Length: 164
Image (cartoon, rainbow, N blue to C red; front, top):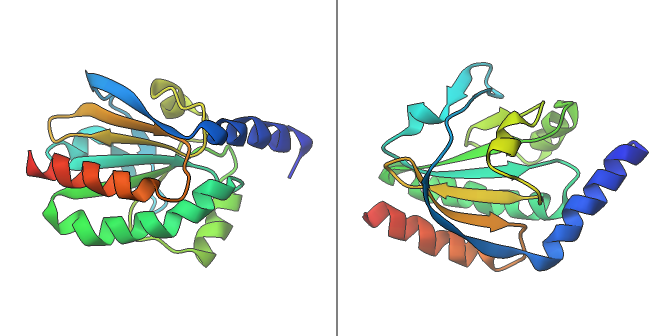
């Protein structure tokens, strides 16, 4: 990893010390289209009508690596009920993400935000960052960072949004 990546990683992961739920006033989630790991393009508009969890992550982020298997379990458990999880990798070079995903496979879609346009739209400044979007396309919850136990809050929010 280059020195620049290490500095960026340290800065972003430093924000994890204050991992928290940020109150998100119900605002319309910005639409975007990104290339997926499967080779097609995926837009947020295509997912309207579902509860969407956007998880912004990077292969160099330790908390992202810890969280990923838990996210996979959530996706498998709730996808039949109208929930979808979308991983948004923020690395300019996707090779590291691809290598990591070979060892930690996931069934949810992984999109590549190589130029950070979508990350900027969602004001991502900590890794990982997680955004919950309701069926109407409104941002409802925003989590910056991850610490063990946060998945309980994720599950509560998924269940609440699915009931709406």
